Image (cartoon, rainbow, N blue to C red; front, side):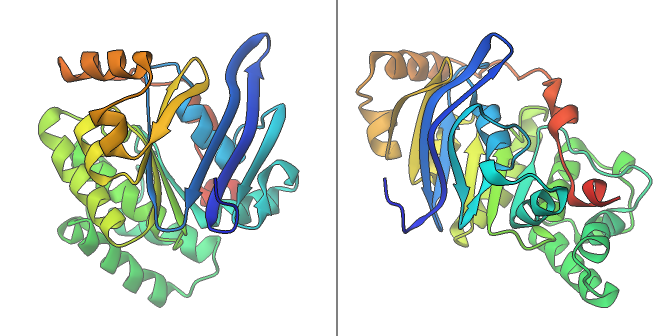
Length: 273
């Protein structure tokens, strides 16, 4: 795995909650401009990997780097906030501020955390809403939007601080099937624009289409990784093949809300006030 070209690198990461092991020697490398998907059964550690990248969870062993930042070494809250300005994170749950309009949801963090002048923040917010095809809802409130619309706003809000890395944690799992496509279209456009993205997803066809590299996890381990054509077309590991065969047999069960979503979700604005 390359060092100099990697924006994200996890090396031999181990994490346990009490006596329960969750990650068991995770090695992942993500180069700048890459789209990487992490697939696997529920409970295999996929979402935990994303939370470790942002410092929301701290492994007991191993190394994590984002660019030149040693995530494991960060202790001060201001340093964690600085990291999370560089890393946009979109969860299954939208986590929008319900008392703020769509536009105000987008400008709050850039103004209060990033120190961006309001006029500039507003201009960027309008551009981002156009990018996710939500410019017509700038004055609406989250409660007036469909699930797919709220998720697109959540993606725009994550982009408002101009991150160099985007993490997507099963962002379509809570959506009705007819709304999934509109969210995947937005992510597909971001990948096409060259934004570095890491996706935890149950959308196998989408992962195969957009990814440069796919990792298959089970029981907190990387069972197999490789280009999508190889992993989906000719998996080397028997367990990978069995999982993909079962996934192809029907739509995977929708992921239930993870209790850690609210506990470990973050927004730079919430951390700064």
